[in-house]
Image 1 (cartoon, rainbow, N blue to C red):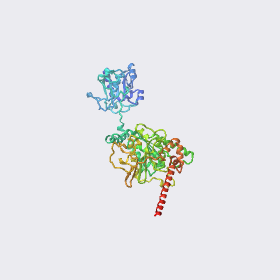
Image 2: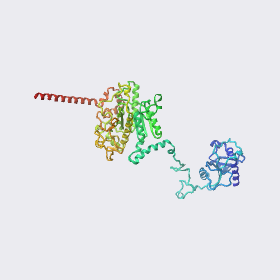
Image 3: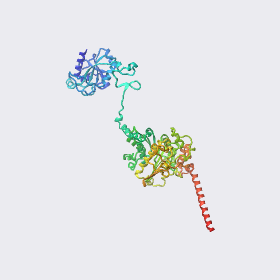
Image 4: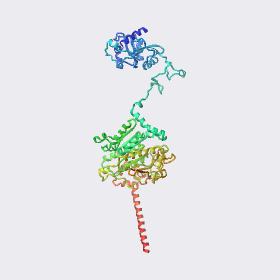
Length: 607
């Protein structure tokens, strides 16, 4: 009866810690390594060693039925209450509303729904030690020591709710219309209709990476909201960018891409960080130069992850050497196999990316990426530096590719490119040349091979290269978009200056004009935006060269690289025949001048 329960609780209050320590079964101690969150206080059977015949066992349906069916009797249920209410032990006056830990709600629901005690009154002990600590079976405390500690535990008399009082989704439609007495908390029906915990993702409030991502994207979201509604942030976020070169230009382009929210960046370089790099290349620090220097591509990728967080950027570095015309493989089979492997890796990287940035040092290192980008139909942005000048240009895309991109298609065109009209697309980096690229480092000293440029030039060129890419991405034709005409404020003659671009302008994107080339100088602090059509005999992007690569692959690359004088590329592109016809026309023109001189002399004799 209730008198027995009061006697048990009185003893329990006096010796609570010692009793729980001594009465806990060995099995419970091994399972919980201390006081369990929910347990039963049973009486009967073997003595618990604390003078009261009580012991504590784990609360479960199995243990409850076992002790209920045997000679033992369940005195009350108990749970570990972690609330911080002040002491009430020994006081006969308890306030009407004493806060109790939230875990009691789960325990009462368990008693009603699992143990079949719905509608019945039960005794529950809210075990609230003054200090929450692990209680091991080996604890030895005297009764006086235990009695001296404050006691905040409570004995509660609770009537378990009915099953129908709980709000479960498997009720009938008639029951669902009735307002439930108790709404379940904690484990509730989830989206699949099964009970489960409700979770709240607090990582945006705790993780520096999430905070960094939200803060860095804020500028772009404000730009879209206030100024450029057509700004496609999802396209920029999913864009796969390939950077060929991780030097001064590569570091500047990578940082600007991060500002635009681009999160998939692959850097390619075969060099190592030297002590002259950190002051000019903003992704490297002095520690990267130790022990011969880290590989540039890998060090730059690691720096991008540190800046934005590994969860916010997918950056990787690839160390390889780009095959170059006029740079033979050395005649060894090993060197040729290595060049074949590098060509295959580079080809796969170009095929898998969306945009290629050509940021290498030498002219000839830009040849094979130019061919690959044209063969795969990829956007290519080229940037080059001089002492006090810079060049940023976009390589023209095929007209057919532009139409496909505008229609929502993706991927390179199939078949040969011989049907394209060179004058209908923009030129590449090599279209202004009438000679094939050769070894530009031959017969040059070490200091002559180094790129010498004013420090501020690289950041200007890198920023303009990325801005040009973003503008092209927002044009329906992509990289096949036409260049602005002279009337729109750009072109060979400069055109008229216009501070704004009309939306109806077919040669502009939501972000403005998209020139073919940007040539600037810090000597006069001026820029030009010329437009150059593709050259039919270009050694880099002409149909003959691209078709030769598509049909022969690495064999074509090997022949071009092993040709020291560039004759192979001159013959395939048609430059040899072009120069021969040009010389013939020059001779004819010179002959006209000679005939004119003779006629003039005859006229003088007549006088």
